[in-house]
Length: 280
Image 1 (cartoon, helix red, strand yellow):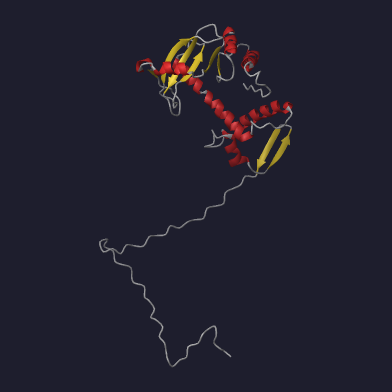
Image 2 (cartoon, one colour; image 1 turned 90 degrees about the vertical axis):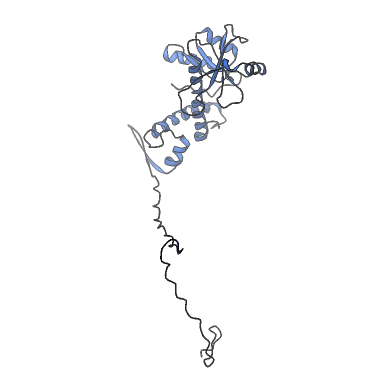
């Protein structure tokens, strides 16, 4: 499922998560089971509305000085060690869980503090879900970085952050076409060895940045690329090092190169200068 909306204002940003939940319900018939998003996307008032609809949410909480001081005063035994099954670093975080109350949310929320993940201060997660363990919730939120990496690839490959026109009518089609192009690049990369997980920018520079011919038929569109073949590398002959003449090696020294005898001067034969001699 693909959902994109580039025509929202700052005042409409907080309610966009509700619009996505409505879109999901219209497409699937039920509300989403879990919504994972950044803390700056919405407000506590919208979180209360999501809780009223029975939608589980998971987001970050801003780190206040008082909360950080309280967590710093906790003993080491209050933190539980966990092992996350995922690639990359920071797979052994330390977790501490609390039940807190947030302004604007009627029911108590669940807070999970995480440290030992490469940051100076603990990361705070809040959720209204009770069934999933803290370790699994942290692993689920860490997957959100994959989406941000995908957006970064779209920005570098398709200039998603640059509007194609000053008319706002062209923003939504441009965003939709960018998502479609990204999916096409991903499908194309599946058949390329060692490029299965390459970004669109890498695929473009290594394979598609060339001339070609479009064949448009009723059945589809075929592109014949005039791919450049790299020139053959010249064969480099490795020069052998001269044999050592050190007496301890036990090898015979190379024969001496004869030096020509110096030219002798004949007093009876006049010497001529090549540049000034008169040959006439």
